Figure (cartoon, rainbow, N blue to C red):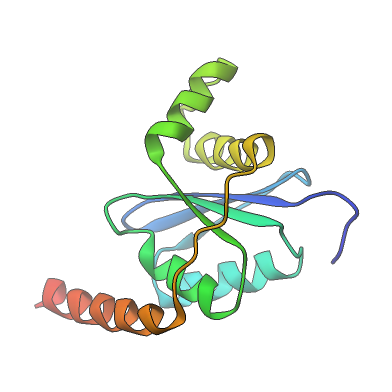
Length: 140
């Protein structure tokens, strides 16, 4: 589903879920922050051909999504949470819900057009492998 508007996607990352907001079409959805949920999110996001997907750096919880998005060549920005927070303060809209957080992250991307994050292809597999191993250790 292509549109003439510049599509920015904001993702609020939690330990167990991803809250996704697609701006300016005002679509919001939530998926689990696991392999199945990430695949679903990427499938839904991809149909809009976004110019950037902005996800905050949150203690590495964002990395499974970041690796998956990089593998399918989606334009990704791993944003500094402090910069996003300062942007939210400047607009006077400090978020109180996951949906508002995701919306604010997308708005940040649209307004400031941050540079895309480049994850080198050889590092994507290494990071993916480490994330799988980390998950195994956490489960044990």
